[in-house]
Amino acid sequence: MKINFSPRMLIATSALAFGLAGSAFAAPPPSDAPGGPAAGMHQRQAMHGMKDFARLHDELKLDAKQEALWQDAAKASREGMGGMRERMRKEHEEIQTLLSQPGTDLRAVAKRMDDFRAEGQAIHQANRDRWLTVYDALNPDQKEKARLFFKSKFEHMRHGGPRGHGRG
Image 1: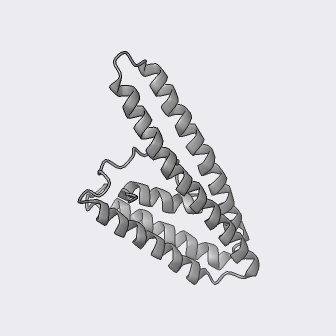
Image 2: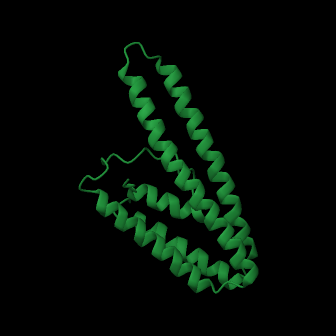
């Protein structure tokens, strides 16, 4: 099964990983069909984002306590995001099925979507709290490296980002 990461989802996931973004689940699901022409591009962008995050990890030169916190947060994020991707796919299919049926109550569909978004927000909050625990354990020099890392990511998105569209 191929997983598509939209550029928006990539940045949201990166920011989610360190707890600096809004809900990663507020973004609409990727519009590219699995295996479509953009699928490879999204996978490359996701891999690039993970490599950047690995580079930050290396630059921080974590001590044993910080490393244990980092690994705990990374594991929880991977598990949470992996499970959420599958739930998002399933929920999207079920909503499509509901909307294909004549007489479907759109209020019920909207409530279901809101409930799903709230579930995603709860997962996001738990992950953010884990990453903020890592951040709290950093020394001032490490915190500055982390700040500069995320500043460069957000500047990249503002000045074109992966899609090549200027934002401002």
